[in-house]
Image 1 (cartoon, chains in turn green, blue, orange, red):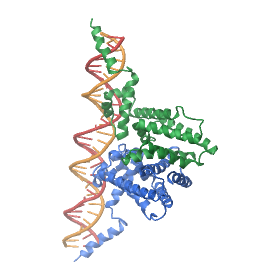
Image 2 (cartoon, protein in one colour):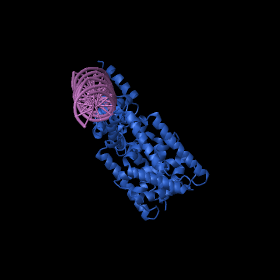
Image 3 (cartoon, helix red, strand yellow):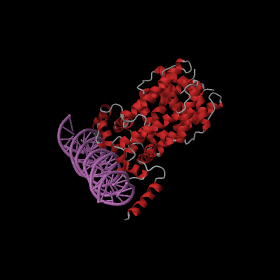
Length: 209
Length: 209
DNA sequence: CCGCAAGGAATGAACGTTCACTCTTAGTCC
DNA sequence: GGACTAAGAGTGAACGTTCATTCCTTGCGG
């Protein structure tokens, strides 16, 4: 009968409204993308679920089809961002270069990512060790830190890095990076690529032998 | 007549019951002290006013006798902490020493304060501050940054500091400091006085000529 | 038609804030 | 000095609002 007429608008919908993938993951992705800037701007407790829903262009109830709770949502977002940063840093990382080159590569990859995904980077800073992160998110963070500690220890034993507790060196390097990004944003100063290069040189001086 | 007798118990009270301060400020202080650890732990939006009242040992309504709103409370706390840090850093600061010594003094004073008042320091570094701080708090922050910029520019013109945008140097130094404090806390690593000294040397290497 | 994804009104809990009241205290009178 | 009183600090239950979450209705794809 009118099956044809019934399908026709549906087919149009599928093709026009969602050009690439029809997607179960698409909706989840769409919700995560809407969540990110809100959490960055107003924080976890400062952002309401209906607000997220409105920005994502979905109903409030739909969010609960994809995430068990607001907490599950923030944890999913945290892990997604961490994974994206990790992937950006580790893909084709020059593991066999010398420490100076490895440091430059690490710095440049972080800069690239922080520039490309400023909200994601700000989100990771902001939510690094908050009370609503679950065990899995904390464990992920812990594993990354452990990797960094091992990496630094090895370089120190080869005599290519200033000796001292690896946690101290990590704190200085990551802190300087985050500080440059956030403090300058606070002053209304926009960090140029040249500033990033200067900062890389500065921070290398801090940790070199 | 008995004006003398009338005033006498009042004077006694003033001296005996409230040895230092007569206690209008005392309650406000008590509320601010209770607020600090809660805001550090759970953030502004994550902490409820009744929670603050319970920890301060006062009724919820009492808080509104001293602060117009929750926002006014957080702004008062922010300004109090900023003023305390500023005071610690600037009191007897060796303004006429050379840049190396001034940097060491700045660093040591920040370490002393961050160790003595860990919650206050953590509170100042809470990033979510942007949305609820009022004009006065932002202006205070701006004035401090401007002072730092002028200070650094002068040292650069004397050739005692690496050249480059002052905002970049501020970001690196403050970032490294904050990063060392928070990242190491995150690893469960406790920063020793020796670590702080090492870090000071590292960060000086980053900004020296 | 059926099955299910999606929406958004409904819901109970919790929020910031208020207010009618109690309790403490300074000042006055005998 | 002790009793009384006016003043105002302190209280916590109650208010209207907004929250996270649930659930019933809607409408499309097969």
